[in-house]
Amino acid sequence: MARDVVPICVTVAMIGVSYGVTATAAGFPAWQVLALAVVVLGASSELLFVGLVAVGAAPLVAAAAGLLVNVRNSAYGMAVGPLLRPGPQRLFGAHLVNDETAALATAQPTPSAGRRVFWVCGVGIAIAWPLGAIVGAQLGQVVPDPWTWGLDAVFPAVIAALVLPALCDRPTLVAALTGGLVALLTVPHVPHGLAPVLALAGLAAARLVRASR
Image (cartoon, rainbow, N blue to C red):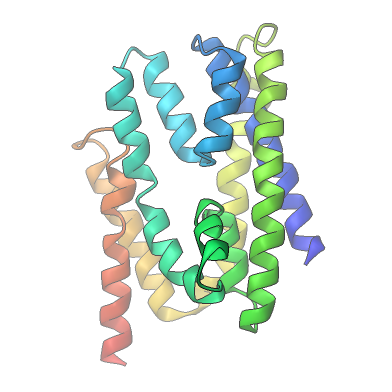
């Protein structure tokens, strides 16, 4: 378990550094960078929010785009929810639902193992992301272009590594291909942040494949 969780938390911290640098360059003070990292705890939505504000978008529009991106967590919640006990534990666990915790937890052979991995990975990310963000905020004054570090490619690379083994399952492969195609076709025609939400249509395609089997 630690073999999977530790590299992910380290990677999340590295992306957090990049986020902190970018947010500082966009004019966000360090306390706002840290507050977003703790309260939102969503790398893609925060990076989108900061990026849109940096190019002149209204904060409300940027926030709406970030919320749309995080709609995917609803699907993750449905997958992870059965692993968590009802009550306060599930309520707190909802804050820790993200790409990494959902992928690792649902990949475990038993519900109890999935529950343990979810909490270890979730708490690890809840610490690593804000920590990386505040470090990045401090570095933001001296690093003019965070993308020169190549940190923007680390996060999607980790997600791809987690997803690739699951593509052996036909419905999952259909969902990934359908969602990717929908996102690719709609990106030029819809507001920023909406294409990943529309890509959730891949879940419907996977359901049809399962039903046909």
